Length: 328
Image 1 (spheres, rainbow, N blue to C red):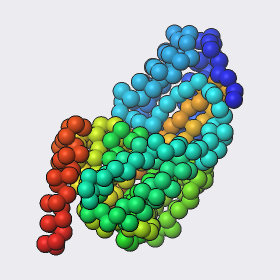
Image 2: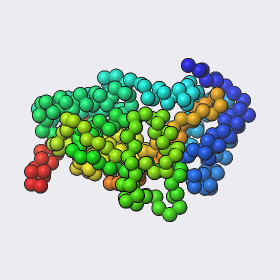
Image 3: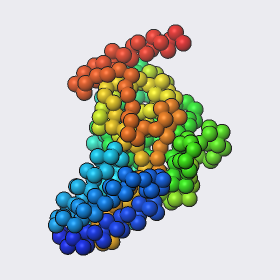
Image 4: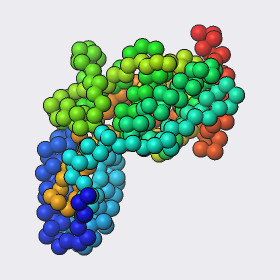
């Protein structure tokens, strides 16, 4: 582990902001924003913060709050503990443990809670849960994604076990995609692309660096659950968990229950800022086929419910969903 600095002179912090500006200009997913008055004002403000800050932790907090104020997620600055390369290796090898996934039962309704999509073990735990769901013949499934901050490729297991055919979810748009005329590529352009099915965040970052458009596609996995699905969301459901909720609603007919999600869905990558800080910034945007852009908007539930009432509302909604399916 590399220990970060505990203090620095304002000149050092100004140099760090200059490095951050250079990283944004080279890697930020929307280069047109970098030429805007908003971007100019924001980086001027950050330079002023650097001139007055004597505490690296405080500078990081002020930095993040500045970007949150303009509604841009996945921008963070932290005192460096690992290099960006080491962080990538960590993300690709980390194990989260059993607390990531929990399966409970209410008679023949399964309630699957997924707290994160990080971890090499999380996807395997989701698969194990679906094996239990299949063996016990569940008639309905409640997927609890409340307070799930997102993560990586474990989401493929949750979607894969819920679909019977391959499903296009949307696209990742990198900085090479021109936003001058249209935000979304044509569907024919997307379907002509080979889907990216890698399983490494480092490989994804490398792919996004050379591909302006990436097709997001899910493959079915065994065992499959064919019954009705309700998904619980709230204001802390974000990033990959929003992607999962949206695609299962669009492709699978799942009903979203709870509060509007966070609207924080961009692809983030870490960068070294000298040997003092680590900057994480968005290198790609996500546009879904069903709901369009989710960043800054969020997913509006089909049925509003408080966290306290969400499970009971979902349980009562599942029989109605079965009746609808029967009529269809």
